[in-house]
Amino acid sequence: MTTVLRLEIVGNEESSLTTEIKSLYIPAYFGDANILEQHLPYLTLLKLGELRYVDLNDKVFHYVVEDGFVKNENNEIVVLSETIQSGVSLIPVEEEIKNKLKETKELIEKAKHDFETAKKLERLLYDEKKYLIQLSVIEKTKKAK
Image (cartoon, rainbow, N blue to C red; front, side):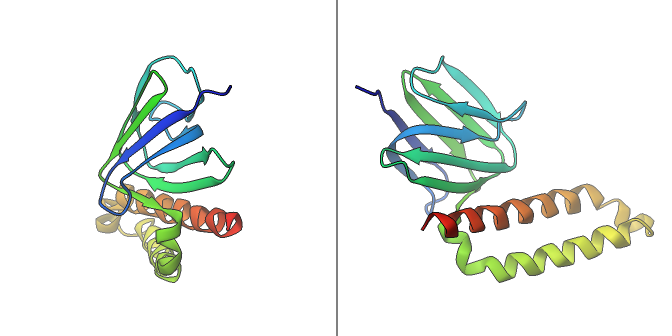
């Protein structure tokens, strides 16, 4: 008999959930990680990226997560993040994300030639990465339906 993992996501109201899963993929701060049954105890920081899990019916669920923590012990996983968005919740705002990405890319291009804007470049690059991850999660979520 396969041991299941218990996943608890604690975040904003939209994303908090508890479920049983087969595996969890996380954007860990020092390198992405996959947690399977009987994984050694594990505690890590999260960075901006895609979090996904496979439920007991082999359905894949995709999320965008920013900073946070993951703790795994005795097949119980807790994901704690203030900012976590499900792919399903992002689909209705896909066009808005595309527009924000376009604006961000334009500002990045401007920053290459303008010292004042260059000071904001780090945040712009972070935002660009976030929008690209959100769009990737939207596409994966649409395909999974």
